[in-house]
Image 1 (cartoon, rainbow, N blue to C red):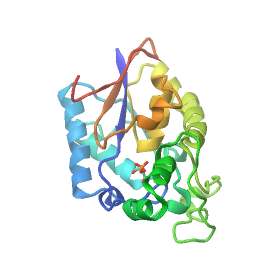
Image 2 (cartoon, helix red, strand yellow):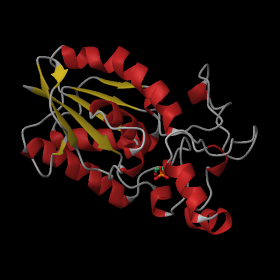
Image 3 (cartoon, rainbow, N blue to C red):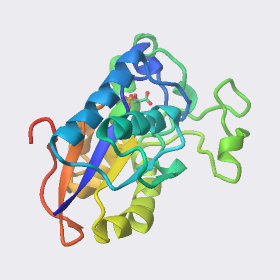
Amino acid sequence: MSSLILVRHGQSQWNLENRFTGWWDVDLTPKGEAEAKAAGELMRARGMVPTQAFTSFQTRAIRTLHIALHAAGRLWIPETKDWRLNERHYGGLTGLDKAQTAARHGKDQVHIWRRSFDTPPPVMDAGGDYDLSIDNRYAGIPVPQSESLKDTIERVLPYYRAAIQPVIEAGETVLISAHGNSLRALVKHLSGISDDAITGLEIPTGQPIVYPVENGQVAGERYYLADG
Ligand SMILES: O=C(O)[C@@H](CO)OP(=O)(O)O
């Protein structure tokens, strides 16, 4: 029996600083590196080692993948990077302090921007400090100005179906190293969570989440590898 393993990157510098991050590329903190290493050691200890990996275009997820694979003795496995696994784009909130933004706009409004299913944050102004539309990394890619979870699902799921599902069907144990909201998009689909209920789902950093796979299909509910 194979498995699908999801891991959110370890703590990032802007997780630590409590800033809206989205597509902005920040690195892991030393704590985040330790979380990634512990995730890989746990996979190894449980004998649940990935045979293929997928990640985003963002340093915090890529480095989490590499640190975890190294700790699991699997740094050599094939890996694919794709922007569709990036974090949800935080639009004009990118770079702002979450607590200061709540003080200015109210907690309820910030909760809507952070967790509502289909209300996107305000758009990012072109040419601003955090505009990535002219970054080489995203050449030829339609960089969003802002994304709701619904918008995120609309790019994550087609990618999952086209690129990842066939690898799972081929019997590989796939590890996806991604982000809080790109993983919420996947978990919503895989666990059949409603648009309302998804607002309450949080994905912790550096904790491998496992879906059992039988005959190439995700079969059964997710669990944390640390509990399994
Ligand atoms: O800032 C972000 O990009 C995300 C993940 O850290 O934050 P939130 O918890 O608001 O989705």
